[in-house]
Structures are given as C-alpha cells and as structure tokens.
Length: 552
Image (cartoon, rainbow, N blue to C red; front, side):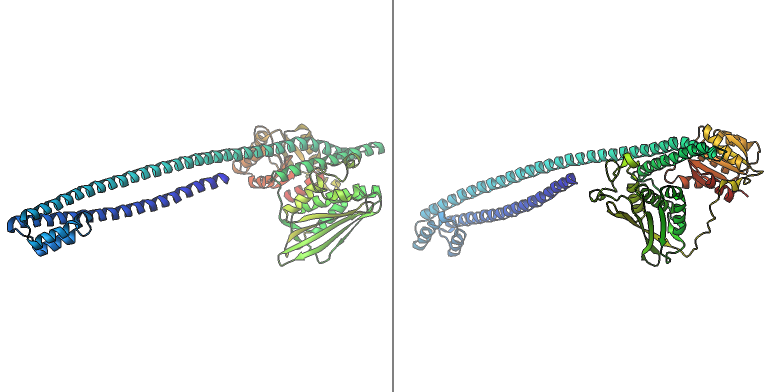
C-alpha cells in the first residue's frame, strides 16, 4: 500500500511539473512573440525612415528642395529616434532659409547613415534575443526531458519493485495455500490413522462386553470402554480445533428437536451422574417450537462439553439446565441455554482467558481432572460459527453458570418421531437372509464389521480393496448392502462407488464408512452415489439404524 502511494505521488509530481512547464513555456512563447513583433515593428519603422530620407535626398538632387509634406513624414517617422531628433530642427532651418543644397544633402546623408547604423544594431539585437530565447527553450526542453526521464525511471523502478512485491505476495499466498492443503491432508491422514485402530479397539470392547463375563472381567472391560471414550473426546477436540482453524468444519442446517437433543444428552451422562450421586434436571420453555432448523450435532457437542465439565468439577449437589427464548422473529428464534452447577467454581482471575486455547482454570486442573484445555475454546468457536456466543459467571466454592445462545430457523414442520433407545439385541435378525459386501482394507476392522453384521443375521463377503469389491459384483453375485471404506489401496471408495453406479449400473445401497471425517466429505460421498455416511469409531446401534432405513 505504501509503495503504491509513493508511485502515485511521483506520477502526481510528473503531472504537476508538466503543467508548470507547459505554463512557463507558454509564457516564454507569448513573451517572445510580443518581443519579436515589437522588434519587427521598430525595424519596419526604421526601413520606412530610411526610405523617407532616401526620397528626401532624391528630391534634393532632382528639384533642389525638400517638400514640406516629405519633411513632415521624416519628422513623424523619426519621432522615436533621439539621435535624429536633434538634426530635424537643423534640417527644417535649412529648408526654411533655403540653405545651399549641398549642405542640406550632406545633413540628409548624415541622417541616413545614422538610421542605417541604427537598423543594423536593431537587427543584431533582434538576432541575439532570438538566439537567447531559442537557447533558453532548448535548455528548458532538455531539462524537462531529463526530469521526465528521471521520474519515469523512478516510477518504473517503483513499479518493478511493486510487481516484485506482488509476485512475492502471490508466491507467499500459493505457499500458504499449499501449506493449508498439506495441513488438511495431514489432518485427514491423522484422523484416519487414529480413528481406524480406535474403531477396532472400541468395537472389539463392545463385542467383549456383550459376551458372558465375570464381574471382574465386566468391570475391567467397562474401564477399557470408558478410557476409550475419554481418549475419543481428546482426539475429537484436537481434530475439531484443527478443522476450525483450517476453516474445514461443516455446519449443517437441518430439522432438529431441541428437546430430543437434550434428552439424548441426559441419557449419555446417566452413569457418571449416578456414580457421583449428582442430580441433573432440565427446564425448557414450553413456547420453544418442537422443530427448528440448525445443527443438532454441534448443539449436542456444546452441551456434552459443558455438562461433562460440570460433572467433572462438581462433587455434590447437582446440575441445572435452563432453556429459554431470548428473541424471536417471523423466521428466526434465538434460544438461550444456561448450564449451572454447584461445583468448585472458577477463580475470577481465570475467567478472562477460560475460553482461550489450551487454557484451564488452574495449573493443576489437567493433572487432577485431565483434558486438553480445548473444550471451551471449541464450544465458543462452534457457537460463533453459527452466529451465537457464550459467557460465564462463577463464584469459587459455589459453582458456575455457562450461558450461550444460538439462532435457529423457524419451520412449520413437527418434530420427527424418535424411537425409544433400543439395544443391539433387537437387531439380531435384521439381516437374516441378506448378503452384505464389505470393502475394507484394515484386517481388524474387517473382523469387527463382519462380527457386527453376522450378529444381525447377515451373510458377509469381505473385499480388501475396491478392485476386489468390483470383481465380486461382476461375478453376478447379488448383494443387498455394501459397506464401503473410503481410503483403500488400488481403488478407493469414491472410485469404486462411481464404477458401481456408472459402469455396473447397480443401485445396491452403499453405506460409506470413513475414519477421516473432514469437511464436505459427507457431501462428496452422497454426490458419488453412496446412500449413507458413518464415521469411525461407530456405534453398533447407529449402524443398525441406517441399515433398517436402506434394506427392506
């Protein structure tokens, strides 16, 4: 910006100098023209005087006298010549007293010589003035040319530097974009590499918990599952924080029931609440519509984080959630949520940075309670991405109140009927008589998915990559469902789905299963021709619910 201002300033100087130079040159030209005109007038008058004197001399030779009219003409023409003014009275006296013609002719010759000398002097002066004016104009032109050249060279240098800066800026932007793409790829790879083994650990633990175990084994398996869930929270926090920073977090706008999200959240914390002897109650404004438009997953994520923190830092008492309408228009409703606990509270000096990245209320919080210090940061950024915000009030020893608001779209639709939570036992015959093709390259996940599908009564065929999946389909084998991993060697899930839909012309339902979970990936899956989308690790019941919707 500064360089651009300098360039404009120099161009302005050039324009100002050009205008001033043009004005000065015009003044010189006008003044020179007037001087030349005056010089020419004087020289013409001198020529006329010489002509008159020559006529007087001729008249003296021819008639021996000078006529009064000719004498008046000579006097009139020599009026401005001081050298001839003193001779005029003598000439008039000669004519009046009829002096000898020789004396009169001699006087006229003397006057003629003086006038000729004056004419020569005036011509020389005129030539000198013209030379000076011409020299001055040449010097001015050369100076102006040099000034313009210097300014243009300086402007060219500035423009060159400006272009170099632009090129560096473009290169820096390209480098930043490349770094951002690398960051996105790194996030995708990290998500995939972390979630893939986590899916195997979690899934196998869930399967283990469904087998006959002793009380001690049940307790140990339960601790494994709780540890896995804690680790998943940390992993999700880090990945979500990275995705928000990279601008890759997707905010949905779909129909949702705030009441259903709250009920679902309560069910998740039943065990930790019961184990700590805490009460959780919810008060919701009855005027809040049954169905609004927003992102239920992000609301659930914020509530989960706040309630989890409240349970973590509260040892007695309870947690109260209050939901009220803050503002409402014809097409928008702003809902205010308050999560109040009776826990340890937050020191006043810590409230100012409690929402900062990697910040916690005190130095020993991580040691005593765990966590990454990203949960509240992610909550605030998620809310701001949706047009909301969050604040906190707290008293040490009495508890804290986290208050946030979110705008939602108003719709006339009714809240969808949500079936009561069911166990996986109810899906035991879901896939009875059905053939399922699983395209998955990870051996542990192959076994896990196979166990889950066989438990539902399905016949399972495993393909280690997309090419194998296509070969099975080309052998005229009928499949009722395809489970498709997205990242596989040889042919990934997108290419395989495209081939199935466009080359084989099959409409078999396809459920995408990915460990990447990046922005727009769900849209890409649906756009490629897949019917459903799930992220790893997955809950068995969630997979069964999706299968119910796709398989008759």
